[in-house]
Image (tube, rainbow, N blue to C red; front, side, top):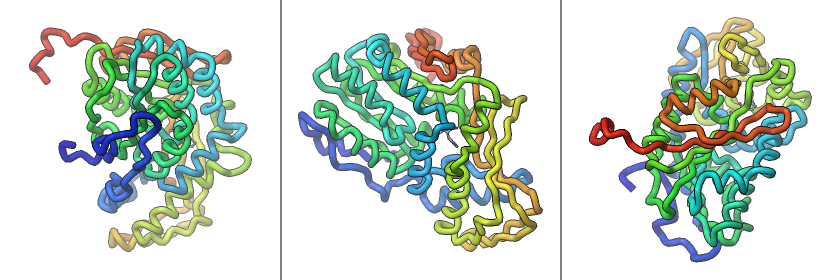
Length: 351
Ligand code: AVJ
């Protein structure tokens, strides 16, 4: 597989019926010690301390995120699920059958099963390739989809899109889905680069489905990231426990607090961990000591909320042609289907 980090059992031959059970090879996890160490050193020695959001999703973090998706305040997942529940048939038909589906940041794939069921109602078998940075998430996805007997599942452990090498296609058309507003984690320039990377890996006529939360009042947004039960706080603080475990750091989780800010200028929710005291935290594996002033913050995640126009522009800027959109009744969340256009003559041979 061209030396990629991908792990797939497809090469071993899948059952004709049923799913591929070989699961995921944890040893090939892209979150190597080196990747974590490099990111943490860069982030915590910067003037504005920061940690990349992918660090939040270790085993515990992925499980906590699943809990978040069920919280009353976290409307995103159930809203997107409602759109998929009513429109999956239309979506797969609009994408153009027959199809295979690749999902970036698949998580537990509970929502995607709606698309996959709609697909299996229209074609005898289908291939689903979930791509995720978390082996735990991929295992959940495989378990969730075991009941779809005519579906082949080929999990890939990779940090998209940089490490992503897509296996040979098995259907004429590919639909890449990027749901859950995962795009919201990326700054505008990163988001565009990510989508461009996806588009370049596809063929003309292939389709892309983007699920993204829409801009709305901070009075609705804030509770979604600062829930009454404190699950999001635990999710955020868990990154420090991860550094303790994986890098021999000595963060005391009682000396940091979960903090949520709405950044109106950037149209994003920002998650921080705020040091409640002045303190110095050793990180053994980095041979470093990190000093925090009282009230100093680590920026752990951003969640951009684009308008409908901005969502559309993002896709166009990445070289896609938006074709159709679906919303919930409140227009809180949008699904956009976009097409990879035919290559322009001037581009042939350029890449
Ligand atoms: C997985 C990036 C879509 O931004 O809503 C939820 C992550 N963080 N609560 C989001 C998250 C805290 C989530 N995404």
